[in-house]
Image 1 (cartoon, rainbow, N blue to C red):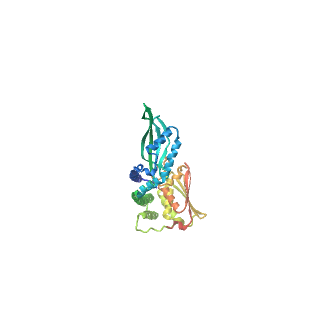
Image 2: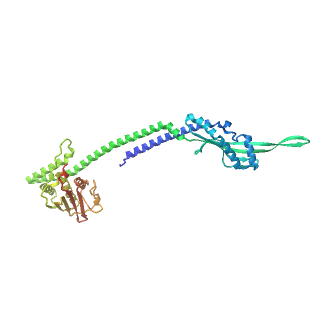
Image 3: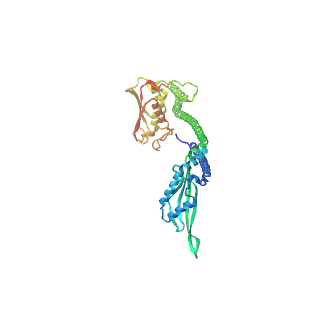
Length: 447
């Protein structure tokens, strides 16, 4: 399908429309995601207030700080502290999962939650005790695409009271204050987020799809109608071009016959008038709607002689040699045969032929028409293109006559209709021979 400029304009506009629709859908998707995230954060925002859920999750200042001091003093290692947190997180996992599920069941959300300690710094020695994540609590499953719920820095400290004696009086002195900096982060994931958004936007998606589909259908029907009209225009142009080409020969023959008649009245000239008038009528039949087409009959050898005689009348300076062994009708109707023969003869003369040899015969159940000339010949590179519509050889020394480039196109079209073949033998400056073979079957030219 060849695309016209108007097609490209439609495609461009259609792509712009798709882009606009995609942009609106994407914005709607992002907006719906933000609404879901906002609601989820709101529901999860105060979850740390429910200490009972986590079985003392070591976020209590005193408990946590005690372990941090032991870690700072080397009594335990980072792996021990991590194990302690993991055990407590495991004990609270089922309870937390059930609680989070109950929060979001009315909305149809499947939410996972997790809180981790990212780092613990011992401020007294400006030393990092832990720099790998430790899970404080989490729901069942693994978070694949975490969304940050909150992050914070927690400072905890503990002062050791030491008992001393001065002047027989016991005194308490505060010293050895251990201070820790703890970086924490909570994350969550709405597992079925895409499905939730899809359900919310399904109506908008369907509307967009049907609008685009309707536009495509309208474009297809419009394009289909334009194609039909274009084909009709092409057919009309073909008819007009063919008729214009076919009218040249009978008109030229009638002019010469008229001049001859004025000089010397002759009954044979009247026959020429009749034949050419018949040909003009046949040529104009495609434009006469409502009138029945004349039934073309197989052409006889006498009709062939009449066609050649009329053609010689308009080309008195050309030598014609005709050889025929036909004793029966030729398997092609007279209008088509006249078009083929006269176009081959006219083509030979146009390209320099002064002597034409026409041979007609029947052999091996094949009808053969051969037209040879002594003209300028055809370059081998041009031969594959000479049957194309409107094609004319573009060398200045090949022809000096004007034409539409329809002659050989019409010949090829008619030969193909009769399931025949054309062979060309040509040499530059020596001449060209066209050989046409048709199957000798009467049914091939009926209809």
